[in-house]
Length: 495
Ligand code: GLU
Ligand code: ZN
Image (spheres, rainbow, N blue to C red):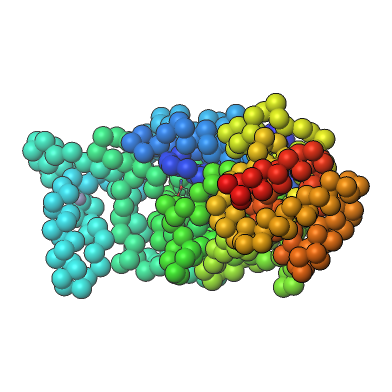
């Protein structure tokens, strides 16, 4: 998959930390990077930021890879495919970071800070009380060798801090335009822990530099770290680490959930696994997620991944917060379901026709019966997992018992109607049209319109008040089983 023939110099990266389950915010970031790489003919780098041993997990790493594969977001460099800047897992690059940290210290771009957490807290509080900026105050910026020796003699440990320049940092964000950060608001920051472990603040820009990343597309929550990173890229360029240029930034807008709060990874509707289990199509989900901050045109919100790639330019991303609307996400998925060739739709249903989803015994499953129902189901499903309840009447020995449906449909008089319907169905030809005529005639005898007459029949046969078109369903179920279920319902009603 290595993109040896990349048609442009654009190099983007998707660089999640493997903590927890993949969530929709992460997928939106991956998607925009991927779409931009594919749109420009550039290169998609997938990097794993696993420098926090306490929080990272192998399981989460595997889930990330699995999620990307399921979504169809392929990468040109990264885990399992390799590439010229391998390894792409930061846990395997510790020596690189140690070396860069050493060079930053030697060149004076970074320094050792011996302040204890308590000292920092105290000074921060004091600064707040006096309305001064509360970032690091630079106490260790210019320690003399004697001061350092004294601290070391005391047995203090030190972290490495990056020295921010004293002038403002200005950059043009592709989404937000020109931004300027004053030096008093961006203080010197830690890049290596006291135990020698490099922090995200160091390894992320170092790898961007080494991997020659040209465009950084990421969530707006990271905007405040951008001036720090830009200063670090410049220092790296001076030291000859990496490509020597600072990437262009594009900060993707916040995604808001219920009640106008930022969608959090802990919100249930943000879990990617949930969408997979419910049976969203990758196409449908990607279509919806691409609308979180972007649009293909004013009057259109349904499109394929290919159309997205053809149209996507990060410059068109909107800076305003985007609203996550589950209903709309479902509606878009439903549209994609309808657009599948019916054979593809039927194939996509397969996981939900088996354990652990299917309540019937596997030997009861009948492919021809399912294939007959599939076109009926295709126009009605929102998500693929809905298929199970729509077809279970065909594969269960007896229909499910749904108390609510039963109470709703089996009102006084239902037994008389069912008896007549059973008699007429027994004599009817077995096509949907003839079955409909039979139930219609039964209804007429009892002064009921078709809708009212068919409700008890539907509940007797499928167990539920809602489902696929009834007469087509009966046609597939067959005479014998249909009549037996009506008899069983009558016995239950009289019992
Ligand atoms: N590993 C970082 C995160 O998960 C990536 C940030 C970035 O894209 O620069 O937030
Ligand atoms: Zn200090």
